[in-house]
Each structure stands twice: as structure tokens, then as C-alpha cells.
Amino acid sequence: MNELTKAQKGRLAIRTFKITADALAMRGSYKPAGKSGQTLEAALREISPEIYGTINDPRSIEIAGLEYVVDRLPKGIEEATRIVLTAQEDLEHTAFEKIEPLKRRRISFRMSEKEICFVITRGLSEVYDVLTHLTFLNIEARKIHGQMWDSSGDLTAMWRELKHNLENRDQLDAKQLDQAIWNLSILLGRTYQETRHTFESLEKSRTEKGTNNGLFHIIYQLGLQVEEGLKSKDDELLVYFTPSFRDMIAHQKVSRNWARAVKERLNELGLLNRPLHIISANMHSVKNLLYAYATLGKNETGPAETDIYTFIRERRPDEAKLNALARKHGMVDQDDTSGANIDFQIFDTEKFKKLSLHPDLKINREFIASEKPVILVMDYAFGTQAFEVLDELLAPLDPEDSKPGKNILSISIMGKAGILPGQKGDIMLATAHVMEGSSHNYLVNNDLSKADFDGTIDVYEGPIVTVLGTSLQNRDVLEKFQQTSWRAVGLEMEGGHYHRAINAAIIKGHISRKTKTRYAYYASDNPLKSGQTLASGGMGDEGIRPTYMITKVIVEKILGGN
Image 1 (tube, rainbow, N blue to C red):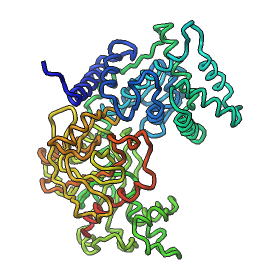
Image 2: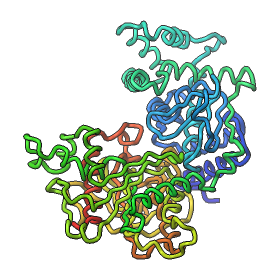
Image 3: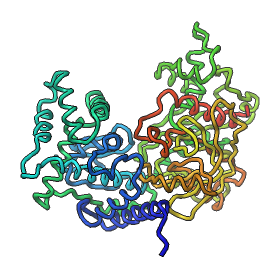
């Protein structure tokens, strides 16, 4: 029998993780230390995501991956022995502590000292995200536990030192802290500088934002969690899916409520039947591109002399002043209350008449006066949620209305993605979306091309892989997508799902076949290059130019300037 290639093993592992996770969600519960948990673990080890670094090295705790996970899970996750995943619950006005992680838009509640409840409103992609992180934590927790006891059955000196330093953390002077971090680095099998970096990063978010318990506490509790589970089956970590969660899967209730709120707001403003352009993006780039110059443009230092990207980077206006001016000139912003965690903005361009724009932004004011286009900017969806929200948004407000939504003229998807042939800060334009782990793929008639950009940033055109999750990326699979006839240029989580919704809307007659589609991504990471994965940190100011270049091109196309 022919032996599977590494890429084939990777694809099989990704498929195994997905199928197992789906089955466990329907079954209702599992223990990470049990057989089902071991199946997830074996699959994740085979995938060996770059973001989880040394997950397969028994001698070394993966602390960069640990920091990545801690930033995306609720504070105290290392203490929990019971984790519940449920659908939207009315827990806002209870005595339960509400917890939001630093770098993921998800809501959790601490139900007791040992129990945390995740309120899942964003579909199966959020489930995969949570389960991959929990599986990773369980793997690392067992490695940590291996450092607790020596061959004689006594607590190791390193563990006793960790406990002492944890109990006296706030009293340690600079020299004692250095010694404590050094001892911890030995326990973790990492260098002092690696350990120091993770300690300082977590400490900053602990003290400034209260989103974690600090590295000493996290390491100690992870090891202790395993120890307590070995002593008593009742203390083993249990992941439980409520019946309401299982009923929610694939029912789009939250997305339906979100889309209705958007369309009703457009209707209230009298904009529902005006020419409509939808953009999936962040909540700052379109607003800043349109209004920042008017807020600061007449400043005595002469900001008009700088290009628009330098202006955006260096002349950030006061947020309150910017919002006040934007609302006066056509912007309506709306926080989401549906549970979808997708805020939105509406821009009525008819109110741009007296708006001063940066000279680099080319628009056609006569076109705007004649056509009166409306721009709807929706915040990022998460994975499969993208299909649900766009599918509902493109449906008519009145179910009895069977006429095509001819007023929806364009749908633009801009965001960040991992790049395969380039580096951070480059731009990718999709010619197709290929769904990882399935045979589904969708050709994209992209209204964007290299010629639309000014040449100061490398632009790659080609297929984009829509992956199951940021933590389910296998190097061999990605290299196969890049190096074979697929010639993929990047990977992300939403593009294929958005395009499924667009195709479905055309088939159902909800939008016209002539609706323009635009897909552009800036590279936030390169998962094939060491030091450029998502675990290496964000882009900071270097992300401004590609983000605003994409925004500028899309806005100019909408407003007749391109």
C-alpha cells in the first residue's frame, strides 16, 4: 500500500479534527483526557500548527502559542475543570462574572470557581477555535505536570520555587524577579529571553486590562489541574455542550436577527432602496479615510503635503471629534445587540456635499449627487458565520418580496489573511476561494486587479484557501496549495463562506448577477515563515498602508473616482 504524503496526512488530520469536533458537539460532552479528547489531540499533533510551535516537543512548553491562546480565551481558563458551550443565554443581568478575552470577540461567564460558560453565537468556526485552544492547553498542561514530581515522588525544587514566586509575586524586587523567571525558564524548557518576553507581555495585559492571571499563575494552575484530575475522576476537565447549543447549530437565528436590525435601520433612514454597496471591513478604515482629513485638514502644519497613508499614520484625530464630524456628514454607527458581535456603519454619501477630503482620495462628486450611493460597512464575521450573516443580509426585508435586490450594486470583502509566497504587509487579490478539507471551490470575478494599486506594495493575485481555523493550519498542506497547480497565494477563514452566500443570493434572485464583487486582503502573517506567524504578534503601524490602500481603492470604485 502506498504511504501517504505529509500533505495527505495533514489533510486527513484536519478532516479528523473537524468530524470529531462535530460529533462531540452533537453527543453533548467529552473529557480531553478521555478517548475522544485523545482523538482530537492526535489530530492536532499531526496537523502541528505553526502557531502552536513546539507542541510535539515533550521537553519544551510552547509559551508563544500559550500566550496566543490565553489572549483569546477567558481569564481563569487555566483554573476551570468544567467548560460549558451554550447558545445565546440571557446571562447579562445575573450575578455571574462576564469575561471578554483580550483578542477575540467572544463572551464567557464564570459560573463558579471551577466552571466557565462560553456563549457561542458565531457558528461552528467558533467551536473549532475553542476546541483547538483547549486541546492545545491540555497537551501543554500535561507537559507542565511532568515537571512537578521527581523520580522519588517528591515535588521538584523548580515546582516549589514556582509556587513560592507565585505566592510572593507582588513583593519580588528586580533581582528576585529575574531569578524567578530564570527558574521558570528551566521548568518550561525555554530560554530566559523567551520566558521573559511572554511574562512581560502577559503581565502588561494582566495589570492594564485584567484579561489574564499572569504567567506564573497560568503555568502553576495548568499543572495543578492535571494533578487534581489524576487524583479524582470528578476533577477531570469536562467539556459540555448544552441542548440549546446543539439545537442552534446551522439555524442562523442570531445572524437572522442581526441582518433584520441592519435592514430595519436602513429602512428607518429611508435608505433601503437607494444604491447600496456592502463592505466587510474593520470599523475604522472607511471612517478615517472619509473624515480624518476634514477633522485635521486645515491644521497649520499642512497635512495636505503628506500622502494619505502618512497622514493617517501621523495625524490621528481625536476619536470623539472624528465621530461627531462623521455623524454630521452622513455616518450612522450602530453597535450590535443581536449577539453576532458584528457592529455596522451606514454612510449616506448625499451628505458629503460640503465634506473636505484628502487630495489623494479621488471621487466623482457629480456621480455622487446623481446616484446618491449608500455604503454599509459591516465588521468582520468569524469563519462560517460569514455565510450566515451575508445570506440573511442579502435576503429581502419582506419575505413576500420576490424581486431581485437590484439596488445592491457591490459587495467588497477586505481584511487580513496569511500569505504564502510573500511577506507581512503585502496584498492578495482572490481569483478563487478553495475550501480546505472539502472539494468545494468558487471562482471569483474580482473587480479588483493589480492595476488598481500604485505599485508601492507587492500585490499577489490567485486562489485563496478558506481554512477551518487559524489554529488548524498544516505547513505541508499549505505548501501543497502554494507549490502545486493550485498556486494559492493566501489563506483566511471567511472568503469562501461569503462567496457561498453571494452565489446563493444570485440563485434565489435576491441580488442581480451584475452585482460587483471585490476581494482584497493584506498579509498579517506568513504561516510558512518562522517569526512571521500570528503567534509572533500584530503588525502595528506597518499594517496602515496596505489596509488603507485597499480601502481607498474600494471607496474610489464605489464613489465613481476609479
